[in-house]
Amino acid sequence: MGDLLMPSLGADMETGTVIEWLVKPGDIVHKGDIVAVVDTDKANIDIETFEGGTVGELLVPLGRRVPVGTPLATLLTVGAPEPSAARPAPPPPAAGPAIVEVTPEPAAQIVVTPRPAPALGGAELHSPLLRRLARHLGVDLEALQGTGPGGTVTRDDIEHAAAAQAQPVAVTPARPAEETRPTPVRGPDQQLAMRRAIANLMSRSAREIPHYHLTTPIDMSAALTWLERTNLERPVHERLLPAVLLLKAVALTATRYPELNGFWIDGAFRPADAVHLGVAVSLRGGGLIAPAIHDADGMDLTSLMHALRDLVERTRSGHLRSSEMSDPTLTVTSLGDQGVELVHGLIYPPQVALVGFGRILERPWATGGMIGARPIVTATLAGDHRASDGMRGARFLDTIDHLLQEPAAL
Image (cartoon, rainbow, N blue to C red):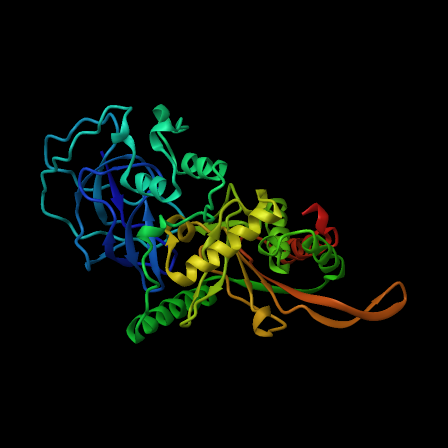
């Protein structure tokens, strides 16, 4: 048996409030299922479970604010024995990007008697969320051959079956359409809390991280010419934006310079084993959130464009998943659509680098002894001197430049 803990969704999060439970005791859940919605100072986040099993007891009532690491619910894993004594004190949260040390308030002893997990096989093995998703997409669960443990049906199985039936499938849906919450409206107090959380994190960044800043102009002629030609051959809804080329170039470059892709934790640098690219998204009501596109370096441009559109839409509608907030390894920020030419950002701790892009502008550019007008974007890098130095940072920006000169290879 395990506990579902209040996750750390960034270095600026110390507490969260459960505002919605999407499961009840006795429900069967699988890895990746959304089980609750938590309000942080910056957004409402969909909380996922990282293991399958049967929901035991919901330990935190709606509306209660609790520290990071507090048990939210018990989870009886498949094949685990049913507890016969009071639940012991929960273990400390797993190590990760979070760097806030929290000691949850001790709870009174509670005897937990969740329903035992069912035997593998049969309709009972499908979680309520998967059953609703299947109904929404018109997929017959009983006819599917599952690819999960013991032949269980997963979310991917349902979506692949729906695609095969030529029915429309949303890109990485946060939950089935019938369960979608209305876009949350954050009041003045919540806006103030968000500003305070951002200010505290950036103050800490400026105070604790020995920043260095580098800037370089990049000629986007080849990239934009290729993009225009490629988009003419694509349906309107499949066309690419220049931003996706910039993101892919950063993600590929990060694989070559691991000292700029990872975390500074407990006085040491920990390189990440993947490139989870944080994308800074401005909220309509004000504020900023930087959730992750996971494994961005391995995506083709079409998949990355879909992921970017989906992430921005769900960020602004309040449907982010906890996994997207907990592990960005390198953040990219761009204010080019706001007319800004140059962005000098501060690093999001415990990350060790941040890349910025400004607006693509026509500027005088000399090449081959001739001067002409070229579309230029100014790229910036904020690096942490504890993990890298200006020479490696300069090569990082130079590699981004070289990749953008051969966009077809991205």
